[in-house]
Length: 207
Image (cartoon, rainbow, N blue to C red; front, side, top):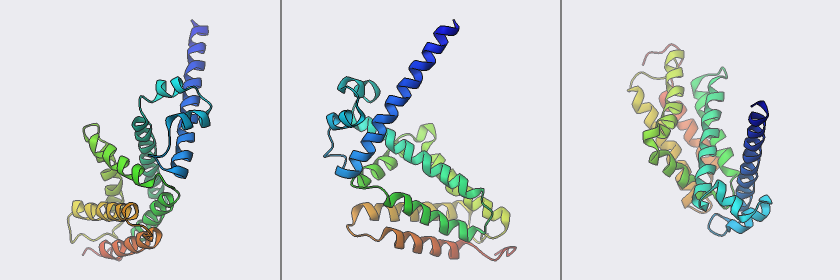
């Protein structure tokens, strides 16, 4: 029984390792050539797996993109949570959030439009499983932390402030994917500064 469990564990580790190689190869090729111009056979060759093995892990290329989008979203959520752990005024936290998001996004290559659209589609298509709520709650946590710290305005409802943060995030990201030459880092930095000044107050100010 112990040997059977050990064998199952080895098979599971092997399965995860192969899946990871496919994902890594896909991201590299998508970044270099774009999602549409990358063939499954090219991903399989780069990952050094058989064509059939690819489809054992991902029924279609779209399923592969969804897995990449899900991973990217989880990284964003983890990044926001890590930012929350750092002691700083809310204004600085908001500015750093938008700078961090822009920095991560700018690392994407030719795949960026498909990836961002898939992240949005995945998030809202899986609303019943709480995916959309996870992103909302991540932004809400920053507002809530600020309210507890006493440096976020109480002039507006908490949900309104959350929606302003999320709205700016979506606008900056969508503009970046749709407009050639869009200055992502500059616009994200400006959006972060604007929001920081708009929703924060001096610590202890109850306005």
